[in-house]
Image (cartoon, rainbow, N blue to C red; front, side):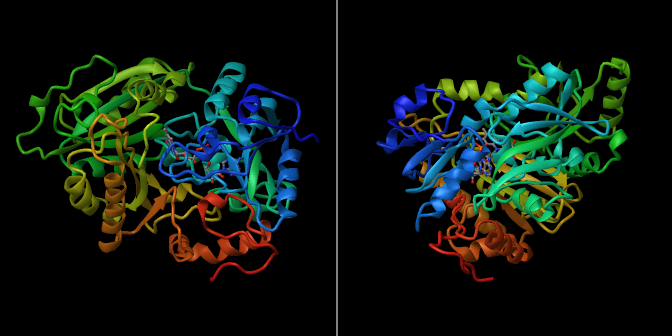
Length: 512
Ligand SMILES: Cc1cc2nc3c(=O)[nH]c(=O)nc-3n(C[C@H](O)[C@H](O)[C@H](O)COP(=O)(O)OP(=O)(O)OC[C@H]3O[C@@H](n4cnc5c(N)ncnc54)[C@H](O)[C@@H]3O)c2cc1C
């Protein structure tokens, strides 16, 4: 193994065969000191560009020899609260391993899998699997420029989750370098405790260097429909009916979002119509419609062996009983890859108008179906009624699709909603509320959930006090602490999550 010390610019330009260690001269220049959230910054001592899992192990072993160094795996840095940072520690650029590692098709007992590096983008997995093999994973995120290791460390949800499970339910095997510098292969049958610890484990137990993802034949086209509701009760009842139908009579994808009853291009009805150029006719809304409306978004895949008319008939059959506002339905037929890449257009536009580089005070919650109507009244139609300058996702998924052995903390209810406040701030100087106000509003939303006694969890949690982490994990906390002591006894890994302080030697760190 060779360590090359170089400045940031040189390191970025080179693509060598061996691991690199780039010292960080200037925090402002260092991507690893920042993330998509743009709210916090932490300067690492060095950025390591590993070429292999062995290099990841070497970096962790080197950190273990010191009394203070921590190690953060960085996927694509799309966290919003510094979760992939290491203040004064080592940041592992997981994209570097991915750039040097080929994806592999693995056939086992007639089933197909993709062996992919932890630092691969889901977009890369999609293009590789579809173009080379006509196959695809079943479970996605809305946006695919996220890494496999990054989303598996959290959950990985989208409109497919209700049917196919989240991404953490769609993994057959992992190669993981644990906090003691050992490289282990784990699965539901080999080292299952490590396998489930790492899934949704916020990077606390090991660095995912390879994941084996099940594949199935990729569909060719997608029948994509959006329908509009003025009543949240109708919206939620229909969404829950759709996600609890038997698989053979269900859509492949069910999502939805709240929007404002006005013509604001970001927050209002222009955000609804598909395909581009379709017209939203507000006069069709019922007289009593409130300030907030809801858009249910569904999709059914079409494979080449299916007749388009049969697929269309299934779509109609599922839409017919829904109580949406007639006339406010929008439909498009798009290619499968185009459908999964739909957020790329949002990225392009946000890069053009400067909001991609501006701070993103995002808040993601899982809220039990029991409390979602109250949340709608108190929060969506209360403090958020004017919109959030970005999508406000609200859609249900099923707890039965999540393995309770993973580290993910979920609400108690069998059906819970993802509520995602995906704020796109205007660039500084372009008007709009100050970022601090939006951060405070997020805190007020979480506070309202607590005060009202909702059954909820934050998704992509960000806490500072260990007591808050204990409350977040609830009945899973003791196991989480136990797994940390087993797999990362010095608390070297993922310091940006701020759960466990680094210890010079193994010992108890957490109060259970
Ligand atoms: C535009 C956008 C859209 C999004 N859409 C969705 C969505 O639809 N659904 C959804 O579920 N999420 C979504 N997310 C959130 C996303 O899943 C998280 O940001 C997640 O952290 C993945 O980002 P990343 O790969 O850049 O990981 P990073 O932000 O780099 O890392 C996240 C955490 O995982 C750890 N980590 C990273 N790589 C590894 C690894 N190989 N092994 C172990 N730990 C690792 C890091 O140390 C850190 O703690 C979205 C985010 C953005 C910015």
